[in-house]
Amino acid sequence: MELLEFEKPIAELEKELELLQNKSRSQDIDLSSEISAIEAKLTETRCEIYENLSPWQRVQIARHTKRPYMLDYIARSFTDFSELHGDRIVGDDHAMPGGFATIEGQRCVVIGHQKGRDLKENLKRNFGSAHPEGYRKSLRLMEMANKFSLPIVALIDTPGAFPGIGAEERNIAEAIARNLREMMLLDVPIVAVVLGEGGSGGALGIGVADKVLMMENAYYSVISPEGCAAILWKHRKHAPEAAQAMKIAAPDLAKLGLIDGVIPEVPGGAHHDPDAAADALREIVSKNLKELLALSKKDLKNRRYEKFRRFGEWEQI
Image (cartoon, rainbow, N blue to C red; front, side, top):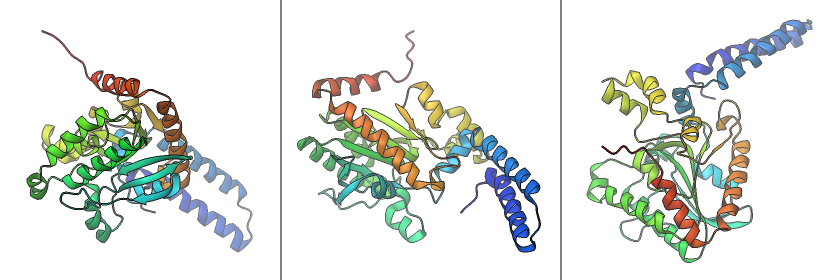
């Protein structure tokens, strides 16, 4: 598995432990005390690293190529997924899959961003950066959910909406702005989960939800740490300081009240145990949906509106 820079001390201890265990078996030597010492050091090092992750380290985990993506969670956390295609205007956007699904017995509509694991799949999925037709497709599916009184689950994982000329020509800003407005007016519950990257308007375009949750090692930000560093420090090498200053990690956003909950991951990130991450997501999303489904349409929309109106600080001069 691909190692991150801060995980190398753990990998070195694991390698040393394996060598000692192999030597003990192959040469029939009692190395139990040495092995126990390495195991204790390994446990201590894991705790020290994974329990004190910096925001920049969480960003690195959020971008890990082995991290579960949207369709991985759909396969593990949902059943009966039936994908729907096209925005009925331009075409189908493979960076924004969506369709009907079931979670813990509750029928719903699920939408989200999908990245690729290799070059071929990333070209198909456009690296998780949706075009205007992706946001129009997601709105079409959300309006369908509204028509049939089905809750909506949005799985966010994008560095941002696609910024190319073609996207601008097809009005990407209008497509996202329309989603922001229409999601605020939907009569059905909406739960959004930031799985990995939650980049700018690309994330917010399907993130106007009654409950916004984040995986423990995800990030949610108006700009990437590298983009912020390039603007403020004139060099992307300052991305770690930018990540720290922007408060983009899940624990910080929960303290600020900008998200409604954090979904725990195993030490080191969801890619170390995708099944455990999927189980946690299914349990918490299902719990939130049940709470929201108990509300009337009027209360649901009023609470959603007030939730977003409370964000930010105002100072009148």
